[in-house]
Length: 183
Image (cartoon, rainbow, N blue to C red):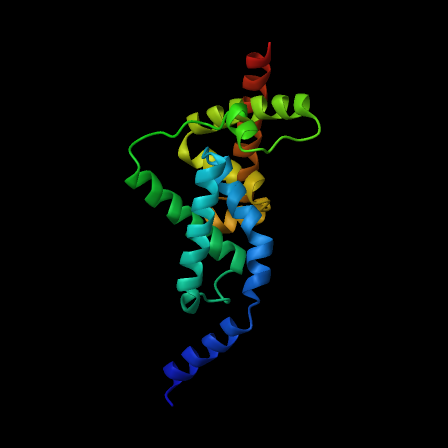
């Protein structure tokens, strides 16, 4: 067996040791939130998350644990899935409304709190969609997936301090915009 075949066989052995059930359990919420923080509604976010994991499963033999963590690899697939989505979809989808949530039977014990949270998240989602792509992606990576600034820096190629500065400015803008809209 030549060295290339041995290296490939070694890669397959490492991939086979990954607990994919655990990866899905831990990363599914992160990927779902990534899409939500990119401005997609719940249904589309769920569909995109499923598509991301299907792509990851089909490409699992291409994953190289020496290059990145599994979560980083899956978020990269999610990013490309989002790009594909924006390329193929020409129409904008409406944001979920509380009426739709009530029709689907997802009422909670505190309807007033749910209404307030829904209204705030709708306003936030509208603001997120208006952000430039880079800022929206950084917000999605930080708050949607829970990545650290260091992980985001490795993922994007930006410096940690640059990411911190951008996120601080974006969060300040979002807070100020939400306060103005609530007045």
